Length: 62
Image (tube, rainbow, N blue to C red; front, side):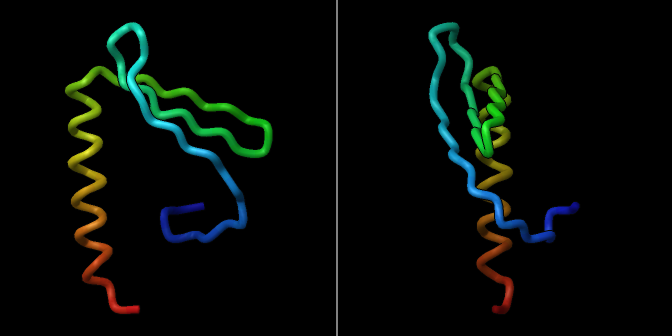
């Protein structure tokens, strides 16, 4: 499975700060919970990557 492989899986995504000063991305799908904690600097880098991907996706012809 790669980035371009479509799947019919529903998932819930939550993003927020933790009480220990980390940023948590929490994914829940089909009974599986995946908490991913990042320090604020890493979270900023991830946010930049998401923005860059969104900008690139806007230029894709549909």
